[in-house]
Image (cartoon, rainbow, N blue to C red; front, side, top):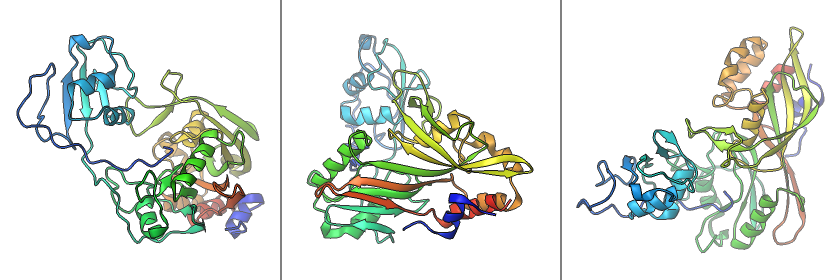
Amino acid sequence: MLYGIAARIARGDFAGRAELLLLRVFEEQAVAAEAETDFEHEDAEGALGGETLSLVAPEKAAGKRLDKTLADLMPEFSRARLQGLIEEGRVSLAGKVETSPARKLKGGESITLDLPPPVPASPVGEAIPLDVAYEDDDLIVINKAAGMVVHPSNGHERGTLVNALIAHCGASLSGINGVLRPGIVHRLDKDTSGLLVVAKNDRAHKKLAEQFADHGRTGPLQRRYLAIVWGELPRNTGTIEAGIARSSTNREKMLVSNAERARFAITHYEVLERFAYNDKVVASLIACELETGRTHQIRVHLTHIGHPLLGDALYGSGFKTREAQLPEGARKALAAMNRQALHAQTLVIEHPRTKEELAFEQEPPEDFAALLEALGDA
C-alpha cells in the first residue's frame, strides 16, 4: 500500500554553465606546410576535429601554465578554446587526464589532446514538443522530459532542448549577447526529468544567472529534487558537504575530491519514505536541495555516502546486483525506467523584471511514479 508523498505522486496530486556558450566551429584548418616547432605533432594537417594529437612540452615550458604552453605551441587554437578542452578532460599529461588549465609544467612532458569533431556554430530550431510550465516575454519554464539533452554537444547536435526552444520561442527571443538564442542558466542531466528555467533576453539572463550564482543565500531561489536511492539512510535529514572534481581516469564521471581543483559543493537531503521488502529497507525516497550547482552533484554526493540512485548506470553500477533484492514489480519498473531515479520537482525564482516570486512544482513522470508505486506495494 502506498502512503505519504509516494501515494500522492502515484495519484498525480501535485500541481502541474551560467550563460549558454554557442558551439564554435574549430578555427580554420592549420596550414598544411609543417612549421618548425618544439613539439611532436601527429597528423597536424586536418587534425582539428575528431583527432588525437600527441605533443611533447619543450624544456623551456618549465614553470609555465599548461594552457599558455598549448596556446604557444598551437596558435591555430585560441587560449579560451584550449582552456575549455582542458576543463572537459580532453588533455592528458603523461597518460593522466589533467583538468586544470593552470597546471604548471616541468618541461619534457608528453601531452595528448583529444579533439572532438567539429559541430555547427549555431544550433538550429527544431519543432520538438515541449511541456511548458510557464512563459512570458522574459523567461520560459520547461518540464524537461527524461532523455532530452539540454544543449547541443558532440554526439547530440540535434534534438536538444536548445534546438526546441529556438523553434518554440521564435521572435520572442531578443537575444543573449546579440545572438538570437535561449539563455541557459542551469542544467539538468540528460536522464533527469523536471523543471528548468531559461532566459529569453540579456536582462533576464543576467538577473537569473545572478540568482543561481547566489544559490538562494540572499534570495528566494530554491531547487528541490526527488530521488530514489538504494538502502536506508542513517538519519532522516542530513547535509553532504564535499568537493567535486572531474575524474582523472574517466572524463564522463565526477567524484568527491579534496584536490585543489575540486569545487565546493553542498547537498541537503530529507528522507520522505522508506521501502522494505522481506523485512529489510531496500530503497528510500528522499528530497534533495542544492546549496551549490555542480555537475552531477546529487548523483556524486549520494554515491559518496553509499546510497546511489536506483538506475544510475554511471555511478551506481556497483549496486546492480542489489536489484535482486527488490520485489518483482519494482524490478520490472526499474528496468522499464532505464535511467537514474531523479526528478527536479520544485523551482522557485525571483522574476528578473517584476521581482515577483515565482514557484513551480511538477509531479514526476510516469516511469518514476510507477517505480514508487511498485516499491510501495511490496
